[in-house]
Length: 289
Image 1 (spheres, rainbow, N blue to C red):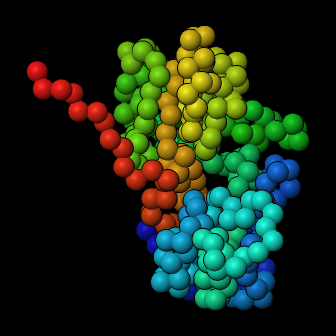
Image 2 (cartoon, rainbow, N blue to C red):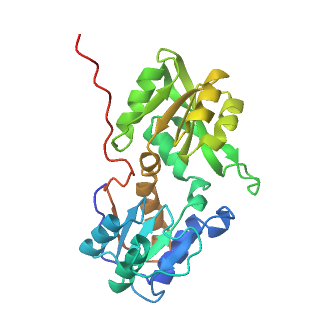
Image 3 (cartoon, one colour):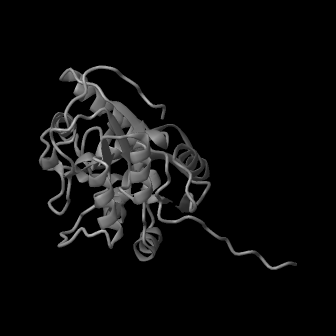
């Protein structure tokens, strides 16, 4: 995504957070989640915002070198309670680097997953689904039935599972493991459920939705094997990072819109650093005939 440059009034960090939280209210997050401002002075000005999936050292260094005042990530840096952020651990070093350079960090996680539109809407668009979309697992707190985890939609035209998997792979960031498929590659796919991030907890919801394929990440061996044996949707498994990255440009645009509503502007940049945990995949070499 190209860098967007503006010259209007720079908001404070508190004003930037307020704008972002109008789009992705923290109250929408799961009870176990840790979203919101991780570090940063609420009064500091924000002129540059870098967006990424993971708050890892390489991303933080990119933000520092670019001169970002704020990093927005999807995944939390500190999901569970800690008693120390000493620089003797990777997370501690990250906290020190952020504070030492005056770079704020904000997390929008499950509140962005359940939003309308949210992470899975961006994923659906990236793999070629057409609207309208509906939640795979609706949020019971939304009377309109628009928010929730995952999305269900249709392809503009039916295609084979092979073609859909190839289309999905082309629409997502390239990763070492690529895209894996479970099912007859020649079966026809019309309707698809997607869920950004780890999605095997929604296998039952995907079956109940009556779709032809379910695309998500981090599918484990036993749940996927049992699901396949029972029949139903084909499975398309992507890298966790890849399934959530498409949301970043959408988040940047919505933040810009929310800031514009209050008369503020910032420069945004979406990181293209691949932070997938897997860096290489090896296939067995068949013996010489």
